[in-house]
Amino acid sequence: MGSCGGVYTGEVAHVRHFAGAIAAPSKAPDMAILRCATPAEAGSALESVQDRQGSALFLFFGSEDPATGQSWCPDCVTADPVLRRACSELRPGIPLHECPVGLRADWKNQPAHAYRLHPAFHLERIPTLVLIEGGCERGRLVEGDCADRERVKAFLGGA
Image (cartoon, helix red, strand yellow):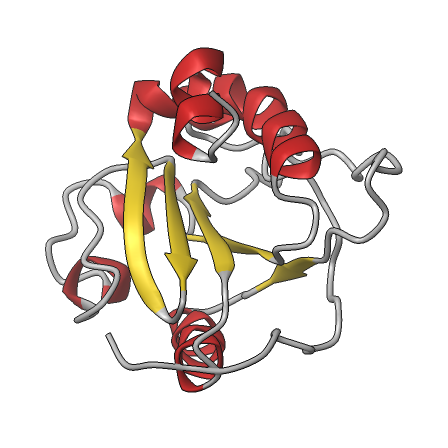
């Protein structure tokens, strides 16, 4: 990954829980939640963070099912409250980029999905939380680890 300097200052769009509910006011109002609706938007956000050697969190999850208003991904629904709380409490100054991968048919068994092929993200499973610090990926949590409070806390530096 490249390097960046400063803090991402993009506009906040669609502040929502990835499970589909409107986000409740956070205890840490400084945390920006930005929705990257497409892989191209997520790639641009990542480039901006890298160019400034900044920090950010990127959360990849199954999109909301229009019929239910919830993510089609049960692991994503389970991880949602754990991730929300930990990110807002442990990393309130770092923007969280929400990156929906699409509906189930768009993601499952689709090896050519843009996030699977993306040179930096190269996703295999969801949910995935990627931590960028100093413009570089410092780690990621995948699937069940995203719902484990202790693993999330340790990952975000709260242990």
